[in-house]
Length: 425
Image (tube, rainbow, N blue to C red):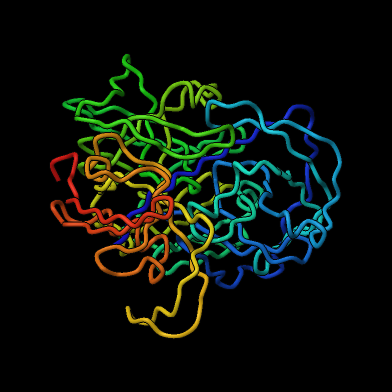
């Protein structure tokens, strides 16, 4: 089982009139399977834009495709730049400048659109590669969901598109069928949270682009406040800057026939979510750490969502017990490391740097500092891990000893601490 730490939420607004676009087209009744990568609970999908193979996040929380991190690809993409616009999203920063481009060719497996509108952002705040460990060039959502039934098989990591008229859900005793509601092209569902002795109905955005479990917007009048211990933490990057808030647990979260006990929850700071709170009846989001526990059929045309348990369903809800957040930051030159022995040859390997450090966490108390580069974890060179594999170790059992070797401005430092759960688990 794996647990992740990157939280990505992007919401789009643009001033002025947006013209209707041509639809995505599927010539057959349904598409073949399109494999994806599941990284930090988010879906990384292959998408061709104007004939160039790119990697996109599949995000139900975004209306129009956003393209970024294309500095070396822009000439190949041959996008038609038109007018400048401003985008707004989560975070406390200002609007982000973007370019609107029309007439682009998008292809996802056998689904394609020859007249797709997109937005190009050059601001490096949308470079997710350091936190995910793989190149990400864009985000796509509503436009590929609106005309199809989209099967998302988290268990086997593929999606498939169906024409609505040819889709008929199969009978299933262990499945749930839920109603979808829409606001500004974003899907919402109804659930229930148990906080203390209260059972509170909630309306939540379905956010496949977020890797947390639940976000709840604090509201004293509804009882949506932490009733268990919490710690303040970095929650993720939004389009308009970083998002911080409180991490805690709730007694239970119920979605249709399914109930998750002692689930993770985050309460983002009000200043970071002022834009999204304009939808007055929204109470938060349900994201990848819960969604991935199901295989889904997402039916926008009929406003339905079908859920079936998969192999992730019973994963426990844990937090990072070290307090360290890493990102890929450049490369290290490795001299002849083969199985821990010195050999011949040189190799460039990713360098993993500490970029966030939770206050009073085991790592901070041991002396770890932001900017430290991790050279080894429990006597194994960091060059032998992916970013996700190292992060997974920080979600280990309560009391597990962690031994790190760090590079701090050229000085080699050894650290040791034990993972500690903030909650009774």
